[in-house]
Image (cartoon, rainbow over all chains, first blue to last red; front, side):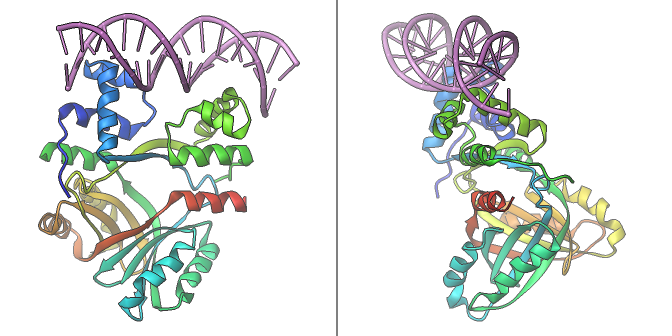
Length: 159
Length: 159
DNA sequence: GGTGAAACTTCTAATAA
DNA sequence: TTATTAGAAGTTTCACC
């Protein structure tokens, strides 16, 4: 995968958009002392290059009644069943992220649920999938860090 | 935490914005057969209520040269050191997420790095934090699922 | 590459229903 | 609560640096 070259202006644009995707290009232009047209062209270029894959809202799931987060490690009976199991996992909407991993687990999921009762149901669904040997759950007591922006800064400073 | 009431219109608006935060309100209005002003008022209401916490770009970190993802479980010598350790972890920009957890680990992190070499450095930084007993790493071979929208649909259908 | 201005589109807030 | 509307603001294109 080729590393795309971004210059300082691109970095600054991404930096502002990462914090708020709806910040007007005219504001970005003003801050960076360039024209709004330039911002537009550069954003488009980054979209075309696939650097910017999309944008999404950050919602407060607690306020929607979903305050439970857990990570669930999945052990398979046999790694050849990985894609089958992933397909089944994909049918459970409360699993928001899943990775195939090396190390302790074969598959590693993040789940979101209303409460412990509901989480239990979700974990049982995972346990019940054919090919799953057992699971191990880590309940999140607190999401302490969640920071895209800091990473971005490091990436910028290194490039 | 009170559960905020969203009606079908709100759901649909969120649904469209989750996929693309820059979709014009006029487009949303057209699709839902309401006025753009109404879309505006409803989005503002959801922002004021804190349901919508913000928006962010989805970037392709691989294209930026960061294709390595791992989860790292941290064992502490003593849980009383949790907040101290979290502060130190927070100084490592390549740790993008951290949760305090029950279960196997005391703290659970997600890291992003350029490659295995770089990941090793990051993990060593975690290991070196005072109060950290040891760590356990799970390397992501493949991010198979990452879907906010599906969760949103379930939340909508349940409310 | 970038600019600046024109043409076009969207947003927003006030008013009315 | 929702719709309309009109002025303000933002986006996008393009001829020209």
